[in-house]
Length: 156
Image 1 (cartoon, one colour):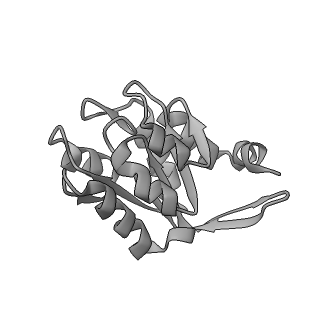
Image 2 (cartoon, rainbow, N blue to C red):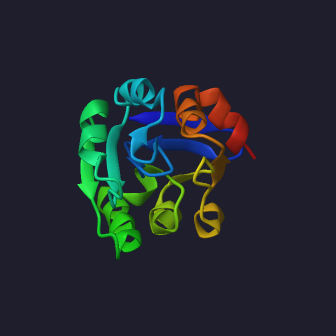
């Protein structure tokens, strides 16, 4: 369980982290350097899921390398699939990180939605449904690893 008290917001409690793959934790299907060890540390506090349409066919390798659960969604209905996945986990107790249009639903429904504006850029719809925007997945994961950064970003 991941807990943090944010002044003016209150106590935030999360049990799950849902990650998009392409453009979020990887570029062209390859994990961004530094992601694996950050995920390893976060697994101590959160159940972590990789949810992707697997555009490059490398999601299984990435999930295995990180020691996380993999769910491959439809390349046509992935937005709905990801939103339903987060709902099944429990929206309010889930942190979601993504960048694409097909991440919009999971970001909209997550208790803490974070959008990554990386090398692929990000969908404007994804950005509109995020509570936090970062330039790199490592920045997003570091917010979670160093809760004072998260507090500084979210406090009222």
